[in-house]
Length: 264
Image 1 (cartoon, rainbow, N blue to C red):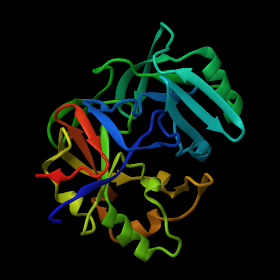
Image 2 (image 1 turned 180 degrees about the vertical axis):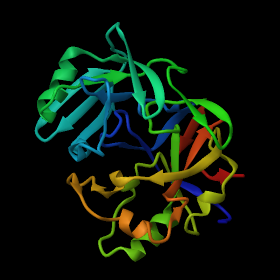
Image 3 (image 1 turned 60 degrees about the vertical axis):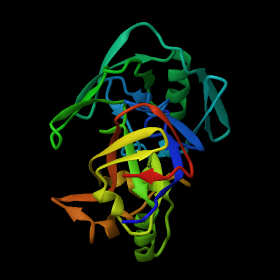
């Protein structure tokens, strides 16, 4: 394991499956970084909408400024307040987890519907505890946001370097939608992390992250290709799951920053 790992990049993804935001620092909470995966799109049956079925979502870019979220798609821009939502609670599911959410507003839902070409709505999770996820490995239940399973995803830089050595067309870390990217010296050394501290925050490794077809969506243009899943499946399969990165939880709240050192 590296003698010293430092934080290389930090990302948040305010709206599930849309493009993320590269941050210099972020405030860690139990549910994930502040404003990370607090919003998602639902169809008319209240089923979640992701890049797996709609790769074009990677072309919706988000920014946060002055307590507003701004979304840019092609030449269109739309914004809404971080705090706004309608009053009616909606029952939805994120995979197997039930979640209670609220529609942001009708105008925002129509903006997304018009650009995607089908009716949908943007919803927000409000309170800690409105979605719980059970870890069979740890036999614990976690309060989480609208992320696929766990609040945080961490990847070491050497893991990507090792993969790129095997690929004809190099890819960026954005394919994997991490929250924390570390400068590391060995490929996949993050797999062996247990409990560790970055900045003000203590984290715990819950499990390796199993990857799906979504990592084949090139975020530069929304084109789905055969890589990198094809190559990863040749050397990173465990129990029929392609592993890349680790799912982690925070044990307290606090700030982490780019260049923070990790301690064990």
